[in-house]
Length: 284
Image (cartoon, rainbow, N blue to C red):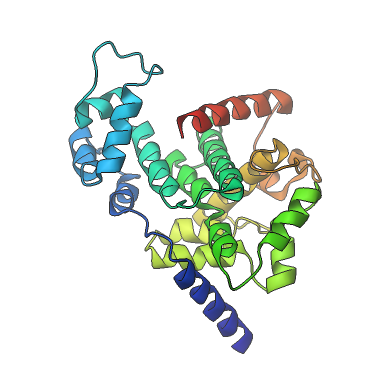
């Protein structure tokens, strides 16, 4: 018990020292709208309008060649109607998460690409295989490695040791080294941080459990399995890694079998996910 308290105290000190910006209020309100199927363009635009950066980014995206609008979009409600409610929800959350990365170095770049990749994959498989609410899956995937940001930026530990070893070994995952070196891992840190940010317990628990060996038949268990499988897919594709991680075939993963996913052609599936991820990376 004393060891657990000491570990939590160190994690809390790391979070306080790093002093990440709190998740924007607009994004937290968006989270509360995620499960509301009746949310209107007006109510969403009202929430988004409180954050000028997010609002401006959505208008810029609505004017991008991808949407092919003929007349310039200057109104937020118009921008939301063009982009679509479901896409806007994910975009707002992604923009908000991106704002957390102030000092953007090579590690931040790779981590951000990985988080975007896992979010995109989690959303895609949740929709494709009817597994879970795709927006909630996206959020869990987007923030699953937020604990690494704290560990990397903290001066209380030397996370560079983990980064160097993972970069030089294509059969190594960071969580194993974290536990060996520090006695805790990025899932422990994420649980503490997201709790401070008042995130929904379902997302907090799913992120905390996403490196589990076994998955339980609960909402949090299913969501954690979705994030776990997506994490491995993105590592397999070498998104956010110097070298791909392919020590375990994707079909042999506990999460793959727990979710009862049927993929007839894994190569085609991976190419589809890669195309989706590359599109998301181009936006952000």
